[in-house]
Image (tube, rainbow, N blue to C red):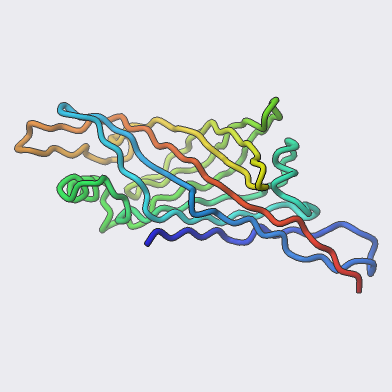
Length: 208
């Protein structure tokens, strides 16, 4: 079973003291969210998907509708941490899974994480685009990276954040797998893609 979870996106509604009681404005990761790795080898290309994706996001006080605020180009998000259990990467082939999980050091370093330290966001004609700068931890090695991403709203009120980041496995001390008695060698460069669908609920303030 595929599992998704996203920590609550907390915020406070700015209003005159005693006039309103603020409520949480949750932002949740939807089941259709995806994260995957595309790679090549001397035999064929391959794709590994993350069966489990988890994240914690916090926003600034005063964001009653975080999805709408993001699409307006406002920097309401204050922290983001994305987590993928390394052992839950699925390459669609038992042998490939075994070699890839070994390459990722899944037993020694169970979590792949990306923690955003800063970001830039600009409004576009059909949404927003920006760059997320933060720390990627892979195989127990931490490196600062910058990831380009786009954000678009949907008619159902969701926010879709998508992007692709290219990296070298050896930069993180990982040895690309070799299969089939050495005849299939995985390339060092892989592309990490993500298509995350978030749903926010506008804050409903209640009078005291």
